[in-house]
Image 1 (cartoon, rainbow, N blue to C red):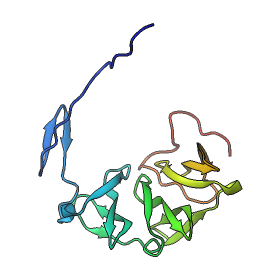
Image 2: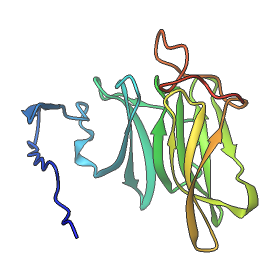
Image 3: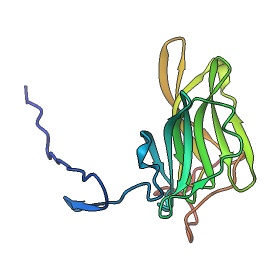
Length: 183
């Protein structure tokens, strides 16, 4: 029986502040405006690299913060403060859409905030499925959810094309590496 061996092992050392270049990767501080004192988790970067969403503990509740990465400016999130704790943030390409899992009473719910229109889009899942985590496609047209039902978990992908406008990179005509699948 063949033994498993890693093909490549990469060790990264992180500096405490500023930028560093290690193993070809350039590291930048995420919080030039002084947010570094908070413990931050679950980072999500917009496709264009301009916005950073992460989770922080505030008053005993996990909440999402969204900031402009270069300036550190915190950006308002209109509908999410009353639905905590937050979990699993994910951003679209330009950061128009922020998807995450919120607590809605005793259940978790996946939602998407459209920062351009100010709308909150709850995703009502079929058959008693409860979201555990998610990942929004960069163009905002699909979402992958880890869902659970009766102790069993699975990953499902949902089409959002009838709900959200595309949030694509400049000049991008379609997403993915091949032709767009029919609706």
